[in-house]
Image (cartoon, one colour):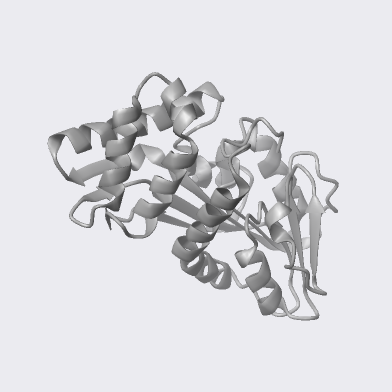
Length: 266
């Protein structure tokens, strides 16, 4: 992706790595289940788009074994050093312009990648074209429109709402869709993918757990971008982070829409 596209570009590396590892801790179990349900097995050739800190890439390489292969494409693979394996190839490239072999992969997977691209259709087409006939495309994207504060004091809930409005404004200003996950089923259906499986995962989280912690970390890193929207002030962000830490609060921070589909033929 182009350097200016990614909302987490130019944040501190150590904090970004910590956030990516927290995302892996929270979301990897569901991603692994979906990939296995789509048939991931020994000998498959897989494409992992935007591998982040590399946990799914590494796990896939273990599943496909020495007779399989995992190709990981990332614009900035700085967090993948030390993840080298004989059956893993890391390609530093923009998925929208990467030189990928056509009809070559048994499975293509991306999690939280398309939301960062104004022209996500270009990336999606590249992924689709790289799939073999009969291959599987597995996509997971957020839907921030599902956000809803449930238990907390009035000021906290107001700040929670305002931060979500700032998230929407930030993405809109970048010509990105903060509810992109909702479009995945139709996007894949239009490309003729078959045997679609659609999940809408909307976790209700207490403060200090999983997704609440991820969103607190994101807010701390994107503080200036949220403030720049004019929707929130410093006190809103502080209240939001306290809310996300408080085990007595409850909220839906966002939903994850996951869609798996099989390319015709094969």
